[in-house]
Image 1 (cartoon, rainbow, N blue to C red):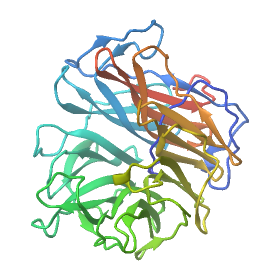
Image 2 (cartoon, helix red, strand yellow):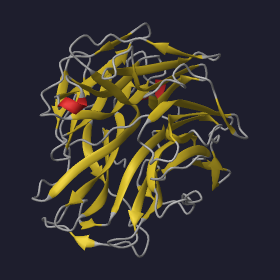
Image 3 (spheres, rainbow, N blue to C red):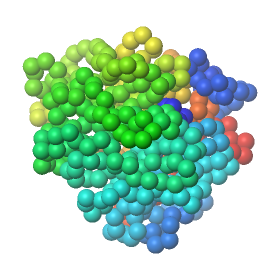
Image 4 (cartoon, rainbow, N blue to C red):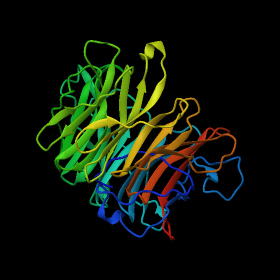
Length: 432
């Protein structure tokens, strides 16, 4: 929902009996018992001029043509109002352009008002995360793959999009700022998190500390946080339970060991940001969190990976899923063998109901994992399993265990193009 910033991906038309609405589920998640299933939802045609080529597969599927586009983020305002952001290419080799979609409970359509990219300092941009607190207010990020000191956010308000600068680097000669995630709470309350990087190099290298910014209705400002000056520290995602209960996750270097990095978990209590602890045990040398999601009841889930040796020595990656039960953080075991796959996103549907995606680093194929309150189950992603098609899902959100959306794309190896894809877990009954 608008108060829960999440990311995950799609699943398959597989019958799944999910847990009933737990204490953390939204009130509207309760309802008649049903067996929700995943199914693909058709997306509207991309704008004129987008490169299109046929996929080598039988007809009758929602994935019928390659459109050179992806759906990268989803934000559920309610059961009958879901927002999606993504990107598309104007030709086989052209740069990306923004794309906005909306589901009203019956179908997914393209609103007339489309996202406008911020002032560019480079040749192209790519879509990132988005969050809406209502149908009339929200934020979207547009990533620029270059060094810059003033990142921009795209604000949806009063029926139009405007480019709004985040707070600039207070020391542009020393570091640049990259914003990685944003969550909207209200028109006068939003949070964004990211990382500071050494000036003069491409973003993503030489992190110099975390960044937390707050929107007060008129401008973004930097808010002090404990890891702001920690070398090799950064924040990747943020989730909101309430205005005075916000979580952000990432990673940071600990102690004097130059090769040991641990998850970074920070909490806002309405007055200040503090660091929370989570024991990992041995022999992990590197562990980071890339996604976080929260229920209104206070349960929080985070996903990432661990590495059993320093990256310079190789090592084996393993999935990491962590849960905060309102008192403490702990790693949740029992994940199936993913063949080196690691979780990329997580969605907290209820106190004992969570979804995460895992991507195989060799094939880029996605698998869905579902926590039922007792164990993890592996759920194949939906879509035709034709030769040359690779399914990658990047985001998930919803309103509870029987209403979950997942988005991503299917890559066509024969044409090196992507087709946007949206899936919905619900009892359907004529709904989108």
